[in-house]
Image (tube, rainbow, N blue to C red; front, top):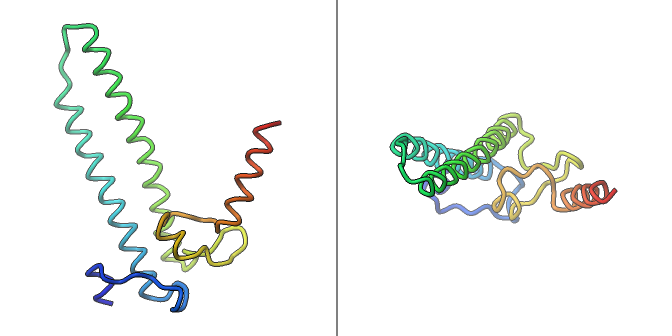
Length: 138
């Protein structure tokens, strides 16, 4: 298990799906991602607090407000991402992590490594996106 913690472990299709090492690997990956987001959020809050002064020039104020709005939208997206990370961590705890919500089949290690918050297999995700496009076009 120490190879998981020291970063030398890479999940493989040659081992049982969602074995103890894979679960530990994805849990560590999700927790590190969440920590990074929370650290960045704190940096943004500090930055916004430092910039809380009134600029005399109208153009500078407008630019500052635009920057602030962009930062806040980014933080909102990251807040939603933290919620998805927390959901993935709950799935790890209840044993459903790594399995497609739609079919119950394994999502796949490469997909989970690229997108550890994935809840659908690639096939199910493609079907979902196809249905969205159909409804969007109507």
